[in-house]
Image (cartoon, rainbow, N blue to C red):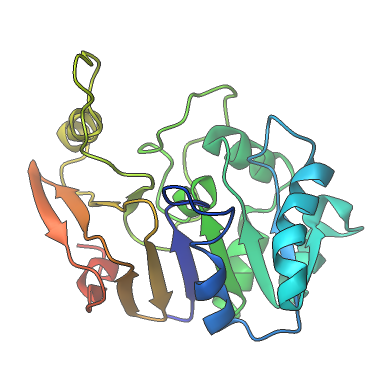
Length: 237
């Protein structure tokens, strides 16, 4: 199966600069100069133009041309001809709803199948999975369905943490993901911590970074090792 996916947990890690965890991985895989098509639809607190400019401010000094998909005359054609597709973080429900409204799900799937590299962070990574049912975001808008791009045969949970602040009495992330497991026990959830990223090339996958992730499936929580072959999770089992 042809695909190149860089699925980053976050745009920042700790006190890092914006896109600092993303840029080195991007530079290793997309040689500059290159034309990057940015999808800003997860952005709700700022305009799409402002979000695109924020990303361009970081990437253009590295030799990349950044264009917002909303700034093109033909979004589907722009997706098909981009050197790489960037999908930013924000609200996953809004991102998916807008992709569905503009009928861009299939163009994105077709572009990846044709070899265009897909790079997402946070919500942009979340939609690469089967559905958005394991997002951390508030459902501020109702998409046509929760079905996502299905570029990988599992669920994603970016920004994963098992830290529980003292005195906090709400549900933990583990408890929320356990609720999904109770409903869909056979569907794996790959939970990745901030500063890490999944790199998928065809039928090979590894977790990049210094912190292991976690796999939730069938009531079990098992480590997802970093910087080693974890391609077994691409088998759909």
